[in-house]
Amino acid sequence: MIHIHCSGSPFEIGQQHGTTARQQIIRSLAFYADYFLSKSGMDWSSAVAAAGRFQSCLDEHCPHLVEEMRGIAAGAGVDFGDILALNVRTEISMGMGLSSDGCTSLFYKPQTHGHNGILAQNWDWETAQQENLVALHIKPNSALPALSIVTESGIIGKIGMNECGVGVCLNAIRAKAVNYAGLPVHVALRSVLESKSREEAINRLCTVGVAASCHILVADPDDGTGLECSYADIVPLSPSGGIYTHTNHWLMPHAGPEGPITESIFLPDSVPRLVRLNSLIGMGQDKVSLSAGGDVSHTETSRLEEILEDEQNFPGSINKSVSPTSSVATLFSIVMDLAARRASVRIGRPTQAVDSFILDLA
Image 1 (cartoon, rainbow, N blue to C red):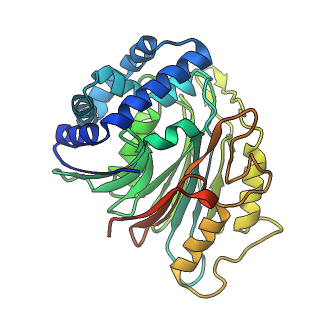
Image 2: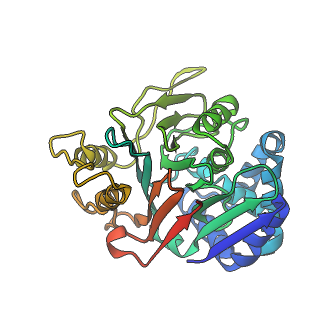
C-alpha cells in the first residue's frame, strides 16, 4: 500500500495526493461507478449530479477542503465532480439505502495505573477496494494539525489520528434521507482530525450537522465520545467504566422534523458482533482484564489487536470474511495509542494481513 506525504496549501496537498495515487483513484472511480450502477441503476453522471448538491455547504463550511479536492482532481487528471462524488459516496450509497459496509469500533481507557485512551477499529468493505487503500499523511502550511489516516484513494477523510492526539473511527448505519446542508460523512471525519481537541471536534459536528446516518467515534487521550448521527440529529454517547463499543446499528432513538427515524439493520451480524465485542473487552461473562500483567500500554494495544482478530460467528465475525452472499470483509485493522500519537495498522483481515505499518505523529 502506498504512503502519500502531503504538505503545503490545500490545493498542493490535494495535488500531491492525486498525482501519487492516480492509478488507485482511477480504479476507485471505476469501482464506485460499477457499484452504484449494479445496486441501484444509478449511472456515474447521476452520482456526480447528486454530489453537486453539497457544493454550497462545502463552500460555506470548509472551502479549503474543496480546494484540496480540486487539487486531487488536477493531480489525478480527472474532473472535480468525480472527486466530489467519491467524497460523498456514503451519502449516495447509505442515504439512498444501497450500501452494506460494516465495521467494529471501540474506545478503551483503563481505570487503573493512569493509562490513556486507546481507539481501535476493523474497517469492513468490498474486497475490490483493498488495492485502492492509501495511507495519507498531511501537514498543512496553516495552524491546522498534522494528521495521518488510512483511506480510500481520492477521499480526504476516514480513520486515523492527528498530532494533538485526537482520533476518529466510523461505523456505517443505513437510514434513508440526506441533509444537503450537513457535512458529508467523510468530510466530517476529516473535520474531526482538523480539531485540536475532542471537545472542539464534537462542537464542530454538532454545530453544522452530518449529512447522513452513521456513527462517528471521537477520542483523545482522556476520553471518548460516540456520535450517533442521522440526517436530522446527533446523539452523543459516553463510555461506561472506560469502555465504549459500537457496530452497525443505532443504540439510541433518533428523530427528525416528521418524527422517529427508522433505520435498516442491514447486517444481521451487527448485534452479535457487538455482544461478542463487549464480552471480549470486559462487559460480559467472558470478561478479559486488559490491565493484567502490568501497566504497559503495549500490553493493552496488543490485546486489542487480538480482539480484532476474533472469528466467532465467522464469516460475520469481528474479523469479517467474505461469504457466499457477500464480498465484504475486513480490509484494514487499526489500534491507536492516542497519548503516544502512535497507531499500528494491518492491511487485510488481521489474521491474514498483507501489509502492516506504524503511524507515528509523536
